[in-house]
Image (cartoon, rainbow, N blue to C red; front, side):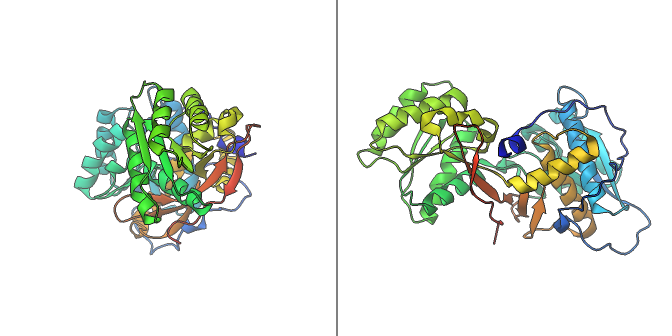
Length: 374
């Protein structure tokens, strides 16, 4: 079941008209009550939200699925005074800037999207100039702040959650093995920041060239760890590199550590067939919330949503709530992927569950998702 919930498939659906169409009715009540609020006083004009989505080009299918998810959020709001303005980013930075300006010119007071780092940076400038909050899908924390909220799960969030979970079961000495790219550097930096807060020593870190020798890097990490070894190792690797790293470290360290991995391991359940990675932990959204969202999306549109559609749902719901009553900073809200809480600095805390890889390919839930800020 968990594997089924984590699987994602891109949808190739026909392009929808710019005016949002309510999805067909269904019997299940809304499971996201925290995104709703009592209706405000009557208004003579609608409150408009711009949706910045790749509705043409190579990512058109993903953009259409995101538009579907946003329509589902609008349906859940139950407020006919909210109007969505879908605008096509064409999957480019220049297109995102044009889409943001067009939505703002047409009266949008908040923006949801776009998906990528480059598009977000381009759309942020006109949004900030207009004083319109932007709820972006990216996980790049560098984009956060000054009216921009980053809704993707950042490397720092992943490292924080894994460190806290591993420390809670006795891990004291941590290591990091990852490529020397932006993701790997941010994982390492986050662990360096988090461990002292837990009263633990700094991690042993080895960052290797992106196409470097992973086995050699793993041997280097084991050497630096010394005779005491490591209790837990955070791997910023995927696929064959993750298998090689875990197998090498299992042999090179005095005792096998607990391996920890990033959220994208949810898309690689077969990693559990590597003996060294059986039982390895990774963070992922709350499965019950995701199941509820997927079920309702399928009831409305007849297809399973891709992984990123849930972020579009959350962004559209948050933008709608914002135009009605301001940005809900500090509140613990229930989103399509579980609990979410907006911080004043533009970042979003998500409650992430901890899963273990299993040889069967069916990840096992180890720790449920906590409510952020609780």
